[in-house]
Each structure stands twice: as structure tokens, then as C-alpha cells.
Amino acid sequence: DVVMTQSPLSLPVALGQPASMSCRSSQGLVFSNGITYLNWFQQRPGQSPRRLIYKVSNRDSGVPDRFSGSGSGTNFTLKISRVEAEDVGVYYCMQGTHWPPYTFGQGTKLEIK
Amino acid sequence: VLLVESGGDLVQPGGSLTLSCVASGFTFTSYFMTWVRLAPGKGLEWVASVNRDGSEAYYVDSVRGRFTISRDNSKNSLYLQMNSLRADDTAVYYCARGDCCGSGELDNWGQGVLVTVSS
Image 1 (cartoon, one colour):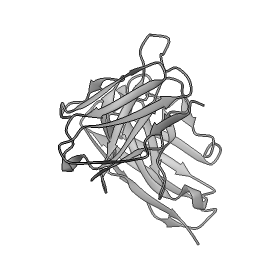
Image 2 (image 1 turned 180 degrees about the vertical axis):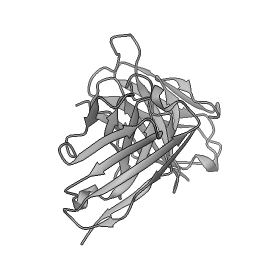
Image 3 (image 1 turned 90 degrees about the vertical axis):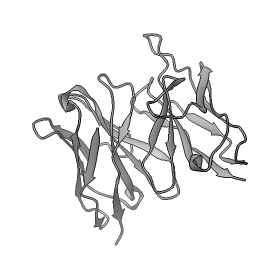
């Protein structure tokens, strides 16, 4: 199984400041069709998960453009250009390339400093 | 797109439970469907997925042989039959819409339903 490792596990950030979190996979995530199936999800307190980013860098509809995804191979990053109060929650990466199983990272908990 | 789960409950260890998820707002038969859970103090865990016509099902090792995912396309419904429940199955269970082909593109999620396994 592909192991997804996120860091840091806790990320205190001041309002208006940038935030960056990392996701590393135990093997490359490029599928045979050339597509990398790496997603980022946000789970706010008391809410269901919401997908933010798919295929490494594609933002979902309605996701603010302060969120961006990047990376390749085994190293991926989610960045928030200016953190807002509504961004508090846990962020998960998930790979869909080598399945079953789909595997999630442990999550990065973003809080306001 | 709307996904509404039901069926969560308190159940004793060794017991059984069936979760349901009713889908609306999209062509149900065009999408893989998936169950994901969030246990207390843990992260998200993929549980099971089923292909578009229900002919193929996939499971995480920890539930294989105990859980059965199925769908009724005539009712736009997804199910998770859970048997031999254990304390570590306690979690909020979410149904999620995949894509056509099983690449893990979980783009819409339900509100979740709580399953508690305890005596």
C-alpha cells in the first residue's frame, strides 16, 4: 500500500499570513495515463470533508484562489497565500493512483496563532 | 449533488448494522461510490468502493469479509452492510461520489452518520 506522510501535523498561522503543508508518498503517483491522482481535502470542525484540489493542482469550483496545489512524483504541497479564520480545520492529502486502497495522509491541523 | 446518509446507531460488539446513502442531483449510474470513515482522534480512512453497475467492490483489509458495499441504481442508493462490528469500527461514516473509473476523485460528500460500537 502507498503510505502518505503529511507534515507538519500541527500548523499555527497568524491571520493574513501564508501557510504551507507537505505530503509525501511512499511511491510515485503517476498513473499509466500520465495523470497524477493526488487530492487535497479540507475538514472544518464539525463538517464533512470538502475537496479543494484534484490532480495535484486543479482547484474545485468555489474554492478560493488563495489555495494552490503543486508537486510531482512523491512530493506535494498545499499552500494558502493568506490564511483566513474560515480556513481552520484539518487538511488531508489522498492518493487515487495505486488503489485499492485509496490512502490518506494523517492530516495537518491548521489553527490560528 | 446531494448525498444523504442514514442508519447510524449504537450497536454492541459483534452486532450488525446497515448504512444507506441516497443520492440526488446527478446521474448515479455514471459514478463509482465510496464509503470513508473518521474514527475519534484519527484521520480519514477509506473503507470501500463500488463500481458503477455494482459488479465490483473493493475494501480496506480491516473490513474485508465483515462489510459489504452495494448499490441499487434503481433507487439511487448506496449501502454498507456491516457485520461482526468491533469497537475500532466506531466512527463517522461518509458516503462520497467518485468518478467514472475509480481514480479516487471524491468530489462530493454526505454529512456523515455516526456508528458507535460499544457494550
